[in-house]
Image (cartoon, rainbow, N blue to C red; front, side):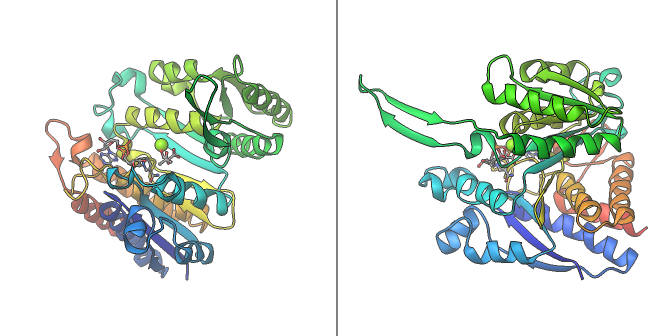
Length: 357
Ligand SMILES: NC(=O)c1ccc[n+]([C@@H]2O[C@H](COP(=O)([O-])OP(=O)(O)OC[C@H]3O[C@@H](n4cnc5c(N)ncnc54)[C@H](O)[C@@H]3O)[C@@H](O)[C@H]2O)c1
Ligand SMILES: CC(C)[C@H](C(=O)O)[C@@H](O)C(=O)O
Ligand SMILES: [Mg+2]
């Protein structure tokens, strides 16, 4: 019985996770699989309940589970806490690190029904289907952080950006392997014209490329990449990049597919994988049933594919999402003239229903 740990977290997390559970239950019913769902606290919700954003009990349940589904963490309520108690630095980052989740897979796929919801012209965005492989446990996020006063009385803040060859090699390998199963192209994104860590990144990826002669490798500076994504997103197949660049480029890529509410993700590399939408807790729309649950539902599909080897179940979810969009149902963020606007829960019901149809 696959044991799935649910971590709804904060803001819209409590609204979107139940919709992905509906999809998983529908797959369970269709293919006679019984999932066991457990739930734990994380983020601001955990801080409010027990004084820490990542309680030991939550970490233990994560380590014992077969896969984790996370909603989102954070929000203005907790932004002024000491940094180690904030949901981002006190829970999400340590959880990724402790579970060894060094690779964050973020597919940015345009569903044809959403072509009008994209800010790009239909002829430019049509066929967009790329995946960003983001390094997740290194770089600026995990470097030394400090503040100190200098001679003239100024305060200075320091964040170090460190990458080792081994860290670059393992994420690079994953990207090449993924490209082999796709359109056989890897774009490695860095800032090698400025950063030493990027020059090492480029050296390591170039060396790895020789082991994958069937995969086309190109290097691109991150500033150019952010422009190329908008100019011609279909030129990309697999983008591999370091932590911070991947964070920024995936928010950019998400909107090209219609909304950040469409971008699923899988964080892998350890014994247990974590699945979560790429977006945050969206405090501006929390509690209003306006959130798009599809990124979380599509993250559940990634869970079935990558953690449980249930390709059929994953495809059933993806086909149901496609069908519901083709039928014209939309949450507010992807609403278009002539379409039918539905709530978060209604969207989840529709997807579950189509999985079972
Ligand atoms: N993985 C995570 O848990 C995660 C990711 C990003 C941000 N955060 C946290 O979330 C909080 C809010 O951050 P932010 O406002 O910069 O980013 P955000 O992604 O929460 O929201 C950005 C914008 O996108 C909209 N949006 C996001 N998800 C949506 C959805 N599913 N459906 C419809 N609209 C959606 C929001 O309403 C908002 O206008 C912060 O505390 C941040 O640290 C957490
Ligand atoms: C909340 C934040 C720490 C996180 C990140 O930057 O990794 C988020 O933006 C994401 O993309 O998952
Ligand atoms: Mg982000």
